[in-house]
Length: 98
Image (cartoon, rainbow, N blue to C red; front, top):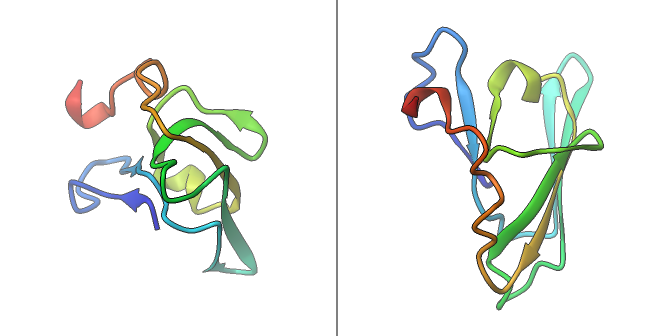
């Protein structure tokens, strides 16, 4: 799904790290009628690297989100490319690495 928790949700405010999806679109039913849609643009065999991402229309500078924000639902969009974007996702390391 391209969403990872590396600490077993043990932090006081757990985070979800973002990885490269291998699909064009996934829809996840979260409960209480909430839905999370994950979509990719320019995804393909040679486009393995995240170029940019946005959540609910807001560009993401980080390669992670707080779990409590993500489970509210909405739309997570990844733009993929054939070369790594070494500037994306580097602004703030995940809280677990700080």
